[in-house]
Amino acid sequence: MYHTNFFVLTILILASVATLVLCKKSSPFHAAQVSLEEQVRLRCSLKSTDEVITAWNGTLTASIDGAPFVPIFDIVGVNIARCIKMGDNYVTTQREMQLYLDPVTKQKLTTWLNPFTNENVTVVHVANDPVQFPLYAASYPMPASSLTDSITEFSSTVNLFYPNTLFGNASYVPYSPERMYKAAEYFKFFTETKGLRKKSKKQVDEYTMAWNRVSPFLPFMKMGATSGYLIQAAEAAKIKSIDELPAVLRAELNRNPGYKHAPPCYLNVPNESSWTYFKKHFNSYLAGAEFPLILGETTGQCRQL
Image (tube, rainbow, N blue to C red; front, side, top):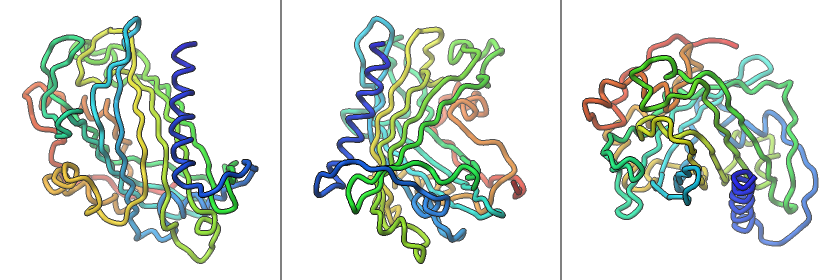
């Protein structure tokens, strides 16, 4: 119950902060709806050649059962998204990168002294290529809230529970021994109602987002069967250019420019995650390579729904 209350409190705090930033006057919530086209207009663009950039920063905190919460990393990240219309539906195809930073120096970590195991490990940053999913017309309109006459908020909760790709191989037991992968992500989007509803606009001018994630320990942390979890708390916003990103993230994108763009189409390849990426590049991890590894050309034909 304590863990559940903490998660709820975290989400409410971030949502309140985002509300205070965007709302210039207080007003009771009242029910609203978001159409498929409005969702696309917010998260990417109705024009498939457009690429929309979302940036975020925040913290990653570890919880070991029976011990206090321990902030372990600062985080900065970027997502490049494209939406494509397919019949009555849309799909989104994205690439994203997130760096784990030293909380003191704010610099990208290549290795990390795990305070729970006292072992120095290679840091494997988030480098997801691609992240893709459909947006089905049948799922819309979505419920939303109007915070004021000018601000619309809507939420998205993603509960994940599926077989752990690292399970069943003795080599991965020290890194991620669980049979099932279980995590949850909580998003709250805030944007100006006028831009969201305006049918002549291909995309909104701006939006902000509160994002919380509860997940197992990351494989690179090498936590074995330690009982606990991670809490990611971040705030995000749409930006106009990569030049607006923090210097540490711009430098990494210049080193690894493949992540500056979304895929050109809805690729016929599986989604990447921190777990699949770790498995794919396990030998490089053991060799102490610098992550993210340089992205080569993504192979895979375009697909339809």
